[in-house]
Length: 283
Image (cartoon, rainbow, N blue to C red):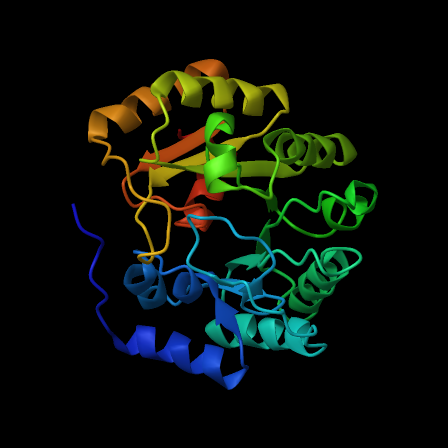
């Protein structure tokens, strides 16, 4: 099975134009997402803030790493907001590189971006997809009480593979992040995502789902891993439709409010539709 081919359209070119105009990055481009043509055609993009250089060395990710990150752009929050307004987005996902070099790991920058969007587009619903902020759990209220609809943090893989896939991250810390956000604001929707095809088993995924349910996480996305470049961790196998069906079946039974699983599913793929589904109970 191959990645989707990139196809260009007027809408695709328009999104690119807006991103370039405001000197913004998208995770769609930086992480080489297979859905970029589809999403750009719908005039949607997941904005990547705080630069395009990550301070972590996750082996699955195509984002630039092992270089010194640049200082934060003070104009970026408002430029993101301007782009959201020009694209007339009703729902937007904001993510970031991990910035372990910053004292607050970027929490304040996320907050500024959220409020800038709400200032220019008050009715736009916002989903944030964050790093683990593992040194700054005491500051999570700044985001949990901000005007966002969804707080998303990806576990990425099962704990047994963390040393290979996320060597600078900690599975328990990521779970704790989701737990604390929900404790701070029980009304907020929490979400996580994982990749498959790295050597995990169904039983390990089922255990991960149980862990998410135990921290009151609402949504899980599951998609096939494709190596973004030759230096990335190797692909072990391609999962079939039955594999995803078993995950969905278990997730529903375990108590997740919504589980979205399939080959090309990504954490922010069809994020608006997923959020709508959870609020209309159509899973």
